[in-house]
Length: 356
Image (tube, rainbow, N blue to C red):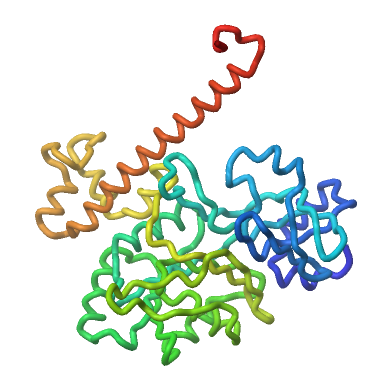
């Protein structure tokens, strides 16, 4: 395979090397997806950047969107003419960041793959939203990715307002690293730089306008991402990233930017809630009933804590809402599987009773 320098800059590690050496891949080159937009791909290899398209076999075998390549994926390729390559196989993913596809219950949307740390970006001023932060962190836990919360625009926040919001965040997320950042004055920027390690992949997630693209530009040292100001009336960010893209820092880590995520659907098991709402689950061990729903049961430790203001109302409401969404997602996913099974039964000529 020649020199591994470029691949190592891309995050090629011993685990991936061991897998590749165990496979019969002599006829293929190895690359990483660095850009994806509407199933159009850019692949980086030792030889440079190439426009990629998936093979007919890969397209035929894909059962859903998550079976297609995503930014961060390691893939096997075969070169063609005019800087084109055919993507033949997606190599095993170490981690996957995904959410419930908006408006499509039971379906998942892949955000990025093979990520080590997710910087969860949250505007501390106009667009401050603890419940959205809950959801972003839930996505990280579901993906088995370490979250680091970055509170942005601290330069325009009132000191008392900043202290109040920090107290709310620390109360809710007491075991997660929380950093403060001003992309304008660069306060807090060195702390973020110190976290980033060579060969590790870092994803930036959050609502539009949270400062993801500006932070990436500052880390890269040049303007690689478009940035826009907040809408004057709504104070909400405008979408500046409509695709997913990967950047390599010189002698440092790998960065992945993602489109802003204002609407978030959680698409994982109950274990995700347990990690995100640890306070509620700890209290639940003291409930009278082991299957307590924390809604109407007597001697519910969670509701007692709520009445005593030991947990805040929005935290409790968000827990119930996400719990309901997950239950709905699981039912929808089961319905999709049942429909797929019925299609297979109808297509099988041996199953006459399922055919009209």
